[in-house]
Image (cartoon, rainbow, N blue to C red; front, top):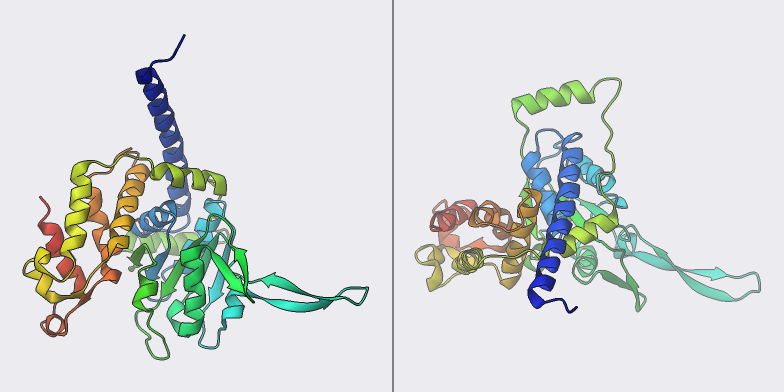
Amino acid sequence: MAVSTSEGLEKFEDMIVRAAESAAGHVRAAKAGIGAVIFGQDLIIERALITVLCGGHALLVGVPGLAKTKLVDTMGTVLGLDARRIQFTPDLMPSDILGSEVLEESPGGKRNFRFIPGPVFAQLLMADEINRASPRTQSALLQAMQEQHVTVAGARHDLPRPFHVLATQNPLEQEGTYPLPEAQLDRFLMEIDVYYPDLEAERRILVETTGAEETKPKAAMTADDLMAAQRLIRRLPVGESVMETILMLVRSARPGPEGGDLGKLIAWGPGPRASQALMLAVRARALLDGRFAPSVDDVIELAEPVLKHRMALTFAARADGETIPDVIGRLKSRIG
């Protein structure tokens, strides 16, 4: 007996719902596992998880001592990923990140080059104080972030899957740093500000991290679970109202008539990659919240971390005391 088109569609939809429920359970368990080790940073954890669920990279901006390094280490354990860390310094060379070829001599006297992979060959890479490295070294990481492979001595080497970079930047010390170029900033799906914990969170930090025993992170997912969730997110439906809100918000964040009076304050704004990032991010946030379709509220919540590193204000606007978060806030207020 032939199966009707409607029955086949229902089975397909049921399969998607079951997959979404399973992925949502894994993701919520991962969030809880990270939150059991990192205290008082729920919003940071959520946004870092959203970034990874979208298959993207994040730039964590915050002063020293706010558990940025610990967050990446914990995420690696909880998500079941091979995590590594690179401390960026002015003398760091591209080969220190990518790896290099060494000349080896076999017992028979034959000489061959052998590639020794660098720390970039990880599933979750922490680039600590990324703006301290030279532009040459930053460009080496840029290729890895964008193309998922590196080229050494003319040979292509694919990176492991999944591959995510969580870079950190100290907003205070700018002496001896190299500002990230706009092309590299645009490769980060989000810029996540890391703030000080509140009083209760800091009290919990004191109690639980200075005793004889400290809570250790436990695996809640595997790399395969994560990649399955990433594939699922791209299949979640997005309503027309959400899509129109994303387009309106991103296009109004550029100089020109679509921004109205605010457009005159903007020197340059986000490109289509920002729309793509926001489209994926709202789906991931919905899944993290146990929903199977995003809402306009998701767009409003994620607009600032997705857009702010992709914009610049005019000199006159900055002289008048305008800031990018303020401009984005006014753009969001236009959303009905």
